[in-house]
Length: 305
Image 1 (spheres, rainbow, N blue to C red):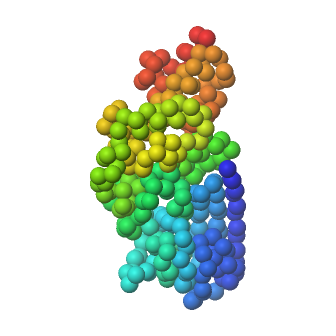
Image 2: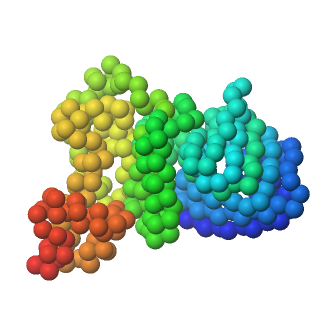
Image 3: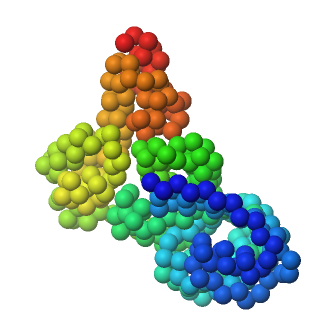
């Protein structure tokens, strides 16, 4: 899993335009202030990219389709996007989706402190196969706040500390995608199809459960489980809800927690090491879920081995 960190500081408008083109897609500069000062920090992990941009800059550009979903949050300044005949101005404190991935657009920024999160379609498909975002504004202020706090946690805490831990990062990436799907309008809000309901039978569930239990130690997505069960992701989710009253990923977490319990009983590493091995970025979250399941703390189990 690729983990790249980069910080760039520029004082030239053409250089700033070139840098932004490399990140977001080919841009054509329409205008801007002279003598800008631009600072940009980037973190890339797999198919997720976090960027922070701020400084003294005014920039108007025409942008080719980015072919990815670029979500943003403004802290200061103004950000403008226009596509499909719609103008969208984003002010401090607002979260947004910039533009449809296959649509060219025009954009402008003025002295921003702007954070963006770029998601590819394949990483979205791992959580909700074929999902497409259909609106630019979050569903509610609370949804926006939850989405942004999740982004900050993953960018500032999880990625720097666990960027080399594939299982933790896979879990974190899917949390980010799931939170984004919960925050912004998208096609997963549609009801499941008759084919999905037909395929959500016990045989599909047994295939899914067997796959989860055989692969709990590896990077497993909902799409992987659905392929193993030979059904769609929606049919898989319906089967787990119908027969086990849970979700595929919640069942996977329960299996991993059981494996962590076995490791602690066998004394295979510290609590923090065990938590990270089974995909928990925060030992406190691991400890809370562990105690809720087993009635004791992880350290108590470890000491009793």
